Length: 373
Image (tube, rainbow, N blue to C red):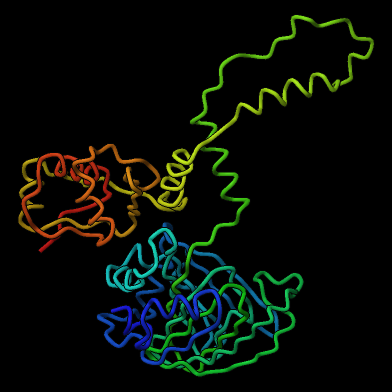
């Protein structure tokens, strides 16, 4: 599947020659769309308050940005050209879009971010810009002209509500048609303009900043560390400058802080939690009429089980991580749960009670569901 996605190239060659190195145009990357999205369906998602959406217009040379949710009347007032509707995380909402995202499984799950869909009539664009992460741009319906440049210029239009490059000097240009895909490394400037009504499926990859990772790790340590003792100064002498923070006091505090330590196991647990933590707008709903355990077990045996579209399940050598938490499941369950993480589903079959109990706990939180016939 991935070789078709990469135009006949093996994932090994793609990663060695192109990933984070140079762009790649792939003609006919996807030809088996089971159910392409259309504007009415995409705009319906943009009207939901649990969905991140944006509307970008360029009027008289000035950029305008609106955030959803949108009222249906807003779309009826749009002109015939020069606007773009963008909807994030469509893979959380539409099963066949999630299936398309997970075709990129030659990359680890902790790097996959989301599949965003943008719709644009002729002239629709979000301006020349660059992303700080790898992205695949898949054309679905219509045609779009893409210009790219290895020079990100680095300066943006002042006072614009979106990050649009002031200076953009294209080096290459293509017109993408239905099923064509363009891969771009991080910070590769690009400018897409719709020639016909159509959509771009943007497959983005997670690349958090070091500052963000460090901040989240410090939050993790706050909950994990247990430091004994308290500040004491039994040899204190009188001061003549009560407002002074003296060097000796600073040194004592420094000694206390040097007790903050971590090891590889703590880092591993942090990584598992951090890279499976749902985004702030993501919520899970327990089943309205939950099956009891025996009925659930029978359903799994007969039909199998699949992760909820929003669920992130990862693992390391000794632990299973699910939606920001460590799953409390015995080692005897890990082989099966790792298969579930890799495939996002388990086939029908006979599973032992420990596995079924772990699956049932996840089901009770809305993290997975028996496969529906």
